Length: 293
Ligand code: SF4
Ligand code: SF4
Image (cartoon, rainbow, N blue to C red; front, side):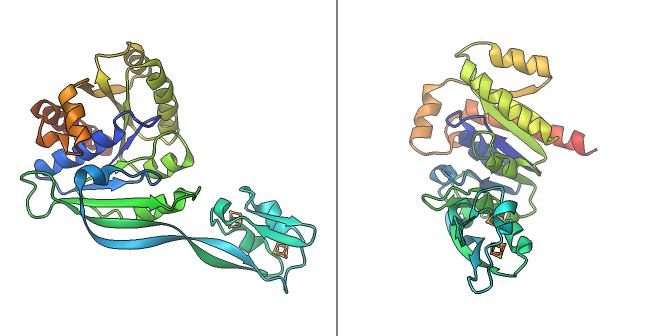
């Protein structure tokens, strides 16, 4: 089962839910894997402290122009929707940081003047985390992608991370915040999406955007309300109106905040939080099984 944890904006507790949902599953005897696709700012490792046993670079194929063959016809610039290649006077300019590596210009060039060159954009690290007590020898599977500094293109790294996800009983994918193409690339083949939000007008606004994105992808979503009991009733009213289930409410808690700030896995230290996560796990599992029937 692949469960993506998303949120319309950062700072809602998305990674807290993702890490602890992976951890509680392991504690309950499942083979669990945590996957961090928030490649611009991956921070699940801070809590899971994985032992990394493999690493690979991620490259993006960018065009290289053979000036001998190029006749400056401009076809490559016309086909590129990302403004990553342009013909100015009789020169072809390539902007590698904007290139999505889609291959459009290679195919469009009538002179065969374009070849591909791999350009490093990030890396992937994988290993196992042994932070969860009683998690057994196997530990929680761990994969994260890291986008290189000053790189704009997160999607190639996310795609590479997704390719590495093993078949497992329980895969929790930490999505990038927002509703950009990075988020879409992360959640698109998930069995279920959990949208983490806060009960505030800003939280509601971002939840609405994230929910619409997930709904357009035809993936079932449920909501986790973090810092429940603060703010207002807008999120609850929106979910009732749209028929979206609120699967968990995490109360505002000084103890949880302190455990978080120490960089620890919260289910190890807070029984109340562990019960919320265990209940959430069961509900998600039930919803996915009902969908798959
Ligand atoms: S399509 Fe090919 S020949 Fe035409 S400008 Fe681009 S690189 Fe040159
Ligand atoms: S590979 Fe795609 S994104 Fe990159 S320059 Fe060519 S057409 Fe544009």
